[in-house]
Image 1 (cartoon, one colour):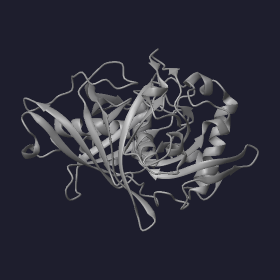
Image 2 (cartoon, helix red, strand yellow):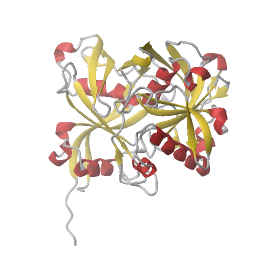
Image 3 (cartoon, rainbow, N blue to C red):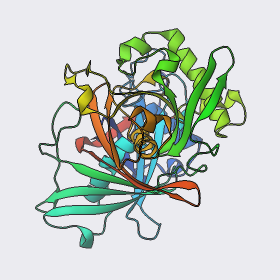
Image 4 (cartoon, rainbow, N blue to C red):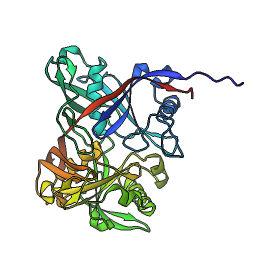
Length: 391
């Protein structure tokens, strides 16, 4: 009989943040080899999630076999002045042995503050017995500050409440999240210097596009230009392999135009960024939960793809990009919302609606965004240990 090494036992917390969920680790709880970036860390996290999985089920891991549930987070006490916690996010591919460390997860940000408080990463002096704790987060992937406003009751994180977030089944406590100076660390807010560009995709077509680096690098297109209404549900696109292939081709050419990759081949290993989304003026539709969304309830409709599939709601980072672009007159997002200056936009997504606020200004002819804010919620689903075979 062959002898195999026993499984590793690693402290972990399984959390929902916004419309995503993932495995959260304190850096010091990881095996020593995985405490630094590299192959050992990636192999460990891939095995913990259950990737790569040719069956696309994640049956032998903690992942949920969607882009919203194949996520890993590593947190540590911050070494950055004025910050409480360092937040590193890894988007785990489902079908191949790859973790994309190129961007943030805005949804899970809401859970970072809660985890940090629960695990002693925030100085107790900062924590009110009752009230709102302000957790200063240093987002390591994009080198940006995020502030999570976490409710506290009797000295503990308040997780339960009546705040409802479309895309999340049950109500919970509201966590306000502010993304400070959210222009992505890889370049200017508008990397091409234009609010609208021509995206030329050989074999597909030529389209108006807004390229923006805010929250996460994002390519915005007009729904009508690519044959959609902007109120599609997941099955309309995810059940169409040709459409998914076309979106990935457009995303790759957009990444090239944004200067995020040097050649088209690099896009395959950079699935997490940039995102690609399409916008349309307000319209009536029925959300995935059966909720009737009226055109009068929203400023515009947005649909976005994540890791090659139409997202079931909206990625938090893409919501930052929507709020930013919506506040700047002349972008495709702003025009779909009716144009003009706006301090916030409410947009429709497959699961319902979301309101995002943005503070932007034009300085010396260049647009800058100071802060983008939105409300999410978060909850610990399970805590204890995961078991991972030695890899």
